[in-house]
View 1 (cartoon, helix red, strand yellow):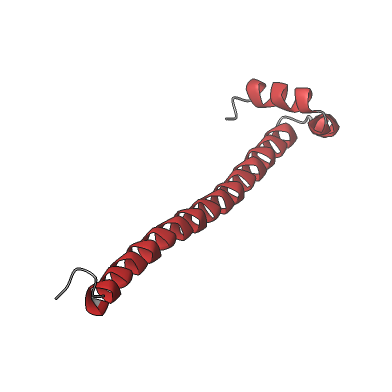
View 2: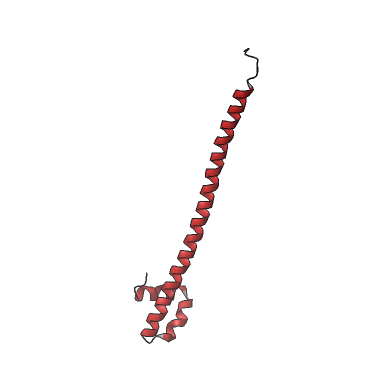
Length: 90
């Protein structure tokens, strides 16, 4: 074979290898992005559930202690945090 001859098989093999490598890299990126999005969504849901659980726990404790009139205070963030601390709700 002359140096100037085109080796079609070698060229096709090279293109296949590069295409495969590109596909793997793209798949990894897509997988990472999808995984992060799922993780963020799951974390948000768990955080919202935890917040709801804390608030319901606080409401129950205020009612048990006959402090139902203080329920209005949970709309104020500082008061809510103070009540969480007072009742040791984390």
